[in-house]
Image (tube, rainbow, N blue to C red; front, side, top):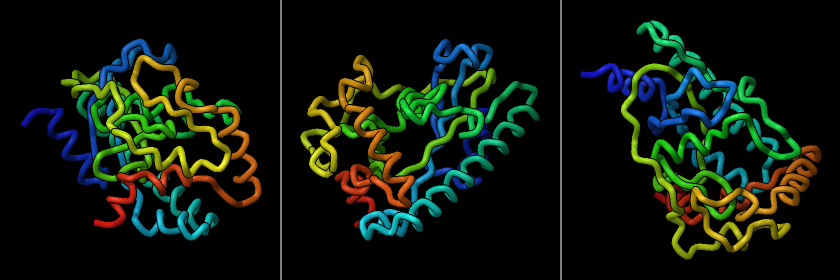
Length: 224
């Protein structure tokens, strides 16, 4: 079994739901010496999504942050594992992948790495969507110079004609345009309107994740 296969098996045994490998060379000048990305997808428990539907946001955020904490631990363990093989690695945790809360944009978006790793696509909502779990996922990543065979990127939306997230948006921030990797984020979502509402809701101890919970594929995951 190859080093890459062993690495993937190791990350899956730690609890990751999906693992993919991507070419991220040149995407962020801060990480120019780490051209390969390992995308980590962790499905959210079905109970967590039900909390959104019940508008129990305080409990939802606690559950979501537990998932982020789990991904952070997995990322750091993956970093140490890769370094033990003699390569450089950097766990791209939330603390290390600084997010501009006004623009809702990090240094190297996890969604970008995940689509380039072929694990899913960007929905109309600008959320990452997987065929297995819809948008009910948390994302993480590890960057490395370890030689990796890259997975086939997904470059176009697979949301067909579903508009559930668009119809669920309370501030009408989602545009009709479906995602592809040639578009800018502003082509599919009014991020200023979305961001203002999210921050306002979060400060009030509430939330706005209807686009995630109403995603058709999220619903299919819930009903399995």
